[in-house]
Length: 347
Image (tube, rainbow, N blue to C red; front, top):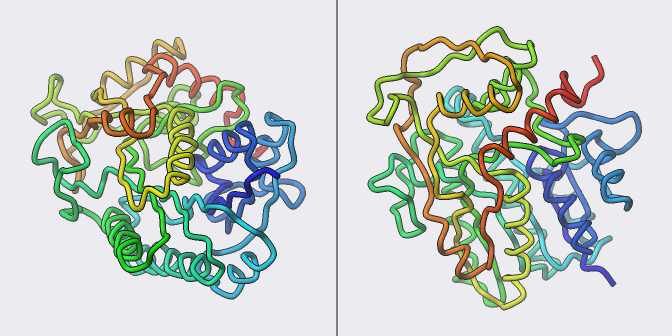
């Protein structure tokens, strides 16, 4: 029997790529999502998962469910026997979290508590959690390793990830038999090389690369570059961008690690290389063959000058290393954007 894995938020950008990797690796993913950040499909399945089914050539189980609904979660756990949970579901826009902090704490924290309670009640004690490099706050040194202090977060989104990490670590200390892997993502970009699944932001993109891609395809007029007076090579902010397929493969490596009864472990998922905003613009111009217009504007509150990973621990303990470079990230992102100029929707 294939191992059954619950994937929360599995219709979203990172979730859908992980569902595909799970299916291809012989697991049986069961996806729940409230579709707040995912496009509905013509039938019961969200559009992203219909496409995952076509790529993987295997049916994907899906239920529309909100993780803050404890009763629905308990019912789900009583109908399925899960060996582990991959937890992606949550609100994820930094700017929005500053404007609507209570909503972010309500969904991200309450939702996770309900999920952990349902897991506890049904004796499912293995979880891979989708955390973020935002837990590190303003870097005290670079590259960031897992020993870097956490909690000095600059926004409620980052704080919610930090609080969830703390909750899971406390649970692992208090209760024997829990295994958890907290994966701190850097900046996932790109898309599956089929061009069939990718990042489809609802409304104006909050992240750099989907915005750059929309400028290239003509959906946005120009890119606003927030600040060119940082202490970096060209004055623009530097980040560690990682191909979403590499990131998804990191989750498969984490699932295997849980089998060792590893307790609670924390790993960075990044490449270890930082690229500036203008370097990313140039890389996307190269991939698309189109000029990307941009304007320099003032710095954005809460942004740091540079942030990139030391990914050596994941390589040493998970046997995982990012394989794809910047050109591949941009080529795959451009293929997705070109084939799906309006994302998953047909308009």
